[in-house]
Amino acid sequence: MIPRYSRPEMTAIWTAENRFLIWFEIEAHACDALAKLGVIPASAAKNVWKKGKWDIARIDEIEKTTRHDVLAFLTNLAEHVGADARFVHQGMTSSDVLDTALAVQLKQAGELLLADMDKVLKALKKRVEQNLDVVTIGRSHGIHAEPTSFGLKLATHYAAFARGRERLRAAIKDVATCAISGPVGTFATVDPRVEAHVAKKLGLSVEPVSTQIIPRDRHAMFFATLGVVASSIENFAIEMRHLQRSEVREAEEPFAKGQKGSSAMPHKRNPVLAENLTGLARIVRAAVTPALENVALWHERDISHSSVERVFGPDATIALDFALTRMAGLIDGMTVYRERIAENLASLGGLHFSQRVLLALTQGGVSREDAYKIVQTNAMDVWKDLQKGKKVSFKEKLKADPVIAKRVPAKVFNACFDEKFYIRHARKIWKRVLES
Image 1 (tube, rainbow, N blue to C red):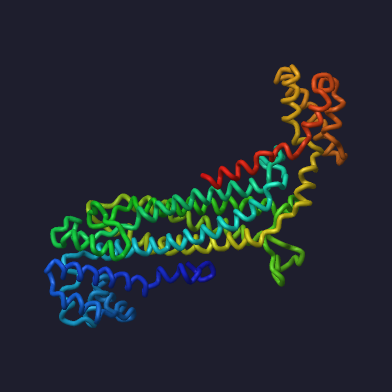
Image 2 (cartoon, rainbow, N blue to C red):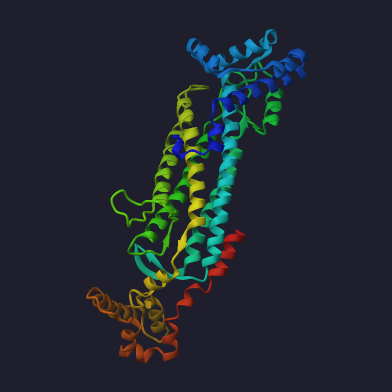
């Protein structure tokens, strides 16, 4: 991932330094287990820890000849450890190192992403509770529907990220497995107790059955989960972009002092953060299909998955880490324009009360079909007046209808136009979200 969309905490997980450190720890812990089993001298295991060093430039140089990264690493390690290096990698195969190390990296990345999601949830929770009592127009198909709570609009996103966090937590657990089972996964040349020891030391679980690799359905689920989280980010970002549109202007992402919106138009305040989140979500989701395709491999081992994971492992996690952090900052700095919300709510002359009048008519003995026709006829007249630029009241229009006047008592009729009616369950809904 390019530096522009990278944060150092996540990038560090995918550096060569971290990768070789994990490789070394796998090999050294395996040596400890082998020594305990009496397969290699205890002094050799201690020597590996004591003298174990590596040089990235030297590894790269060796790999030009070996064309095998694990062998290049082991060769360089041996140059530092000396004669006892013959006991390193006893009975193991390169996948034991590569797959177990990838599991550690994905666990590290996943835990950082969980912390990122906590920041998003915290920011959303604060905004929800600030705006639960703010009545705003709900929109379906982009058209005014019925009122809702601005806080509830945000609560839907909170709930989505809470679900996403649980999915991610489960995906991390699923992918954090260790395989030290030797060629084709039979343990013929390495005792299963070595695997158990390494797994415990690295905070992983034991892979119940590996071929020569850890099954890739685990990785597919991990990246699919990242894709779902990314889609939740885009869902929020799209809402934010719509709310900031000039014609809507109900909410706005932070616009810093000195910030410029356009090279040509000084007046512009563009939703660049939300647009950036939309783009980053696409990058993360791009990893999902290749990860699913990695599940199908030849027999006990091939490396068709390897290049995919080397690219998308870092890119997807780094992009998502950046996006979640950016989203938390956007929410923290977001401005909600309550006066504008009220203006938009009133802009169609009260058309959003149509269903309540419809139901009042049915309660007054009018068939639903006839009630619908009465309310819709009046509503279409209001639409026509609005399109002509006239200021009109849907309530007054309905009040003049003789059927409504006859069938709906005045007190009931007036109650149909109470906007607070629509958000009376907002706090109950929010409580359900938090409890779930």
